[in-house]
Length: 310
Image (cartoon, rainbow, N blue to C red; front, side, top):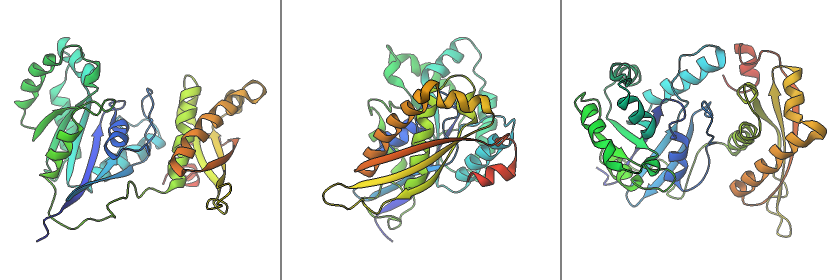
């Protein structure tokens, strides 16, 4: 039997708990989009972290919600499928949000139990991660909450962490390592993801749309990569990747908002996205963005397939 440990861990939880931030912090590189807005993650993204004789494949998943339209149904299927395909589950919570609910007697532990049962039909180990502890002025405030939840016997361990400062992440990695099967690594030790660069690039562009656009428009945007030209990436004089991407919206009015007056909004999105993409690809990037209308694309399976969701 190999002395190495290797396995997959799904980061699950409600929207905006910081699952993507934890993934990025654990692997030491940004591959998942992050935003203060909920429902940023639409598709599962895998990050790989190898340390000494342990390799963990972390799977970032969309936040659990009650689906109201076809895109949200797809997102929930992504989460449930990911939870079924891993060795360990990590339930991620925003500690300030949970503490506020606890203080106001609105923390619904029965609902939490139901959600976990829905995710964990095979009785896999589940860890509870309390994220964003850097926002707490008094960390001892967590203790009554931890004791209350411990009585439910839902979690193997409770680990407070901060994705922002990396506090507690080593403890999380060590705790997870003990629960993984003994087997050889599935990926090279220096791998950080098996997600295609095109998908990560599309998500970075959508992340910047979330940052620069208000209200409901960002949630009705999809991004597809039309071309990804790497012919000059290894040019010793001027390495360059040329990318063309399309931002799809549902209505003409939304298209005008995304483009902005004199094209200023789409320019802002493009500049910010290009900076992120250059860090990912480690070379100069020429990024061209286009905006197209696909009426009702969030509502129908046919349109979701066209845009690469199904």
